[in-house]
Image (cartoon, rainbow, N blue to C red; front, side):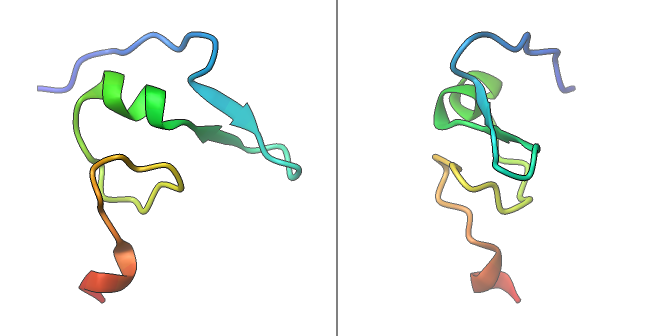
Length: 51
């Protein structure tokens, strides 16, 4: 079961295009890899390796 992780300062930044980009800090607090190929994934997931 996934739990709610509140967003705090330092958990994301806005890209030049206006998207939220979650930081490694947020991913570690969340505690698991979502396998979406996140830019700052601390779990080592790489979408290119499974295709």
